[in-house]
Length: 431
Ligand SMILES: Cc1cc2nc3c(=O)[nH]c(=O)nc-3n(C[C@H](O)[C@H](O)[C@H](O)COP(=O)(O)OP(=O)(O)OC[C@H]3O[C@@H](n4cnc5c(N)ncnc54)[C@H](O)[C@@H]3O)c2cc1C
Ligand SMILES: NC(=O)c1ccc[n+]([C@@H]2O[C@H](COP(=O)([O-])OP(=O)(O)OC[C@H]3O[C@@H](n4cnc5c(N)ncnc54)[C@H](OP(=O)(O)O)[C@@H]3O)[C@@H](O)[C@H]2O)c1
Image 1 (tube, helix red, strand yellow):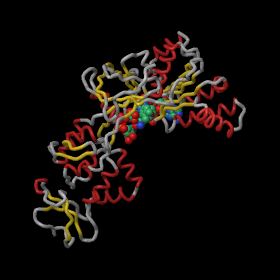
Image 2 (cartoon, protein in one colour):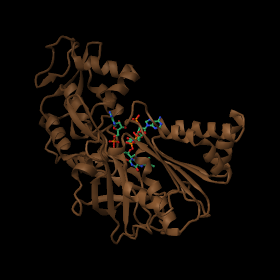
Image 3 (tube, protein in one colour):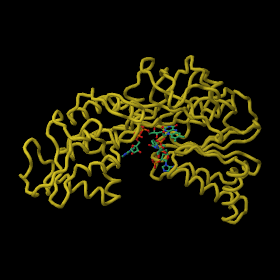
Image 4 (cartoon, helix red, strand yellow):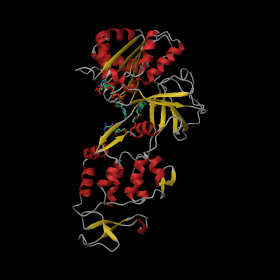
């Protein structure tokens, strides 16, 4: 198996890769967009093992950056200081900050531009060319009578006491739930429209924005089966709020703006020390991976196939519908025919009147799952952390309790202290 050691490539110094494939895995009429995306490792010298993840560095949508520059009245050439050094505002908004979701800190920072209630009104210079304060800021605080029109010439008031944006700011900063709800559905375009009276210097504009972070993806290939490439199974995040269609920063980038063989994309390896195949190939493996959680199990099956491992493989997969989301069906069928995939249970949650989830099928097969576990089998889970992984965890405990004839407390300890911590044969890759 290839190793990932001694690589010069990292999140800070990513390798520039190109895609060799990028296609939708869903069947016609599916309500999801899940893509199979293949990166070429070229002459990078990058290696990996089944179970590792790939880091991808996204670029913010150019149209969002242009809209933001226009809304803020900037050319994009203004110089700004960032954690990575000085660059143009356009560069900062494209590659250094997350412009698709407004940050709490950025909203809180607006406080320095909001009216105070003791007769002192914060005002701004209307034109940026008139910035003249000692700290370079375009906003000054001026002690006046508090009357609406009592402002020095050359300045304009940005908020009156009844300004709705002041009310909004007060509400957001005094109610954490309101703040959470607000930032969950808005990017800076929405927020600039809500606070349209405020003007910024280029530096003020980026201060408080979240720094751009790479995103990790569980690798869906074995390096021995797919030499020189890394395969991913990527669920594209799309949703609509405030009459605008939106996409996840990285998944939107990969889906909408990365052309096969043409677009340079920064990547790096994120090796795992824990989510690994058993050392002894004769060990049985139970893998639970609904949705994009199937990714590392395709890698495991490729690796176990190529190793000629004698242990049995059991995959629990599921998603909305059999016609829309039966990812990698041909490969799975081939593995079944060749006896690599011994058991394959499929849970379709939106094909019938009742939801069928992977844990329902686990429960039905409880006796046999216990049998594999009692024989030293490994148990893997990949995919949604907040709901699926929790329910699968509880179902595993229930199975051990019922079929291993343990009290619920003993079964919990058997799973959490034994399989998970001590024996390290209950392994999770959840997000
Ligand atoms: C170890 C690890 C492995 C992973 N493996 C995979 C994998 O194999 N495949 C995979 O697809 N992903 C995987 N992920 C998740 C992946 O890293 C990204 O989080 C995911 O692709 C979303 O990134 P994004 O930049 O497109 O979305 P972001 O721009 O980060 O947007 C996600 C955010 O969008 C908002 N959002 C999303 N949906 C909605 C909605 N319906 N309504 C309102 N807001 C919404 C939320 O704020 C959410 O936090 C993995 C994560 C980890 C940590
Ligand atoms: N961090 C991020 O920004 C990000 C981005 C993308 C995905 N994710 C996470 O990754 C997960 C994977 O997304 P995905 O599109 O691959 O698949 P998914 O949303 O996990 O859906 C896969 C299957 O799991 C089912 N499911 C829902 N709740 C479940 C539960 N409690 N127990 C078992 N199964 C359950 C779904 O059914 P129903 O939908 O019919 O209920 C569907 O059939 C997402 O759920 C999300 O939480 C996170």
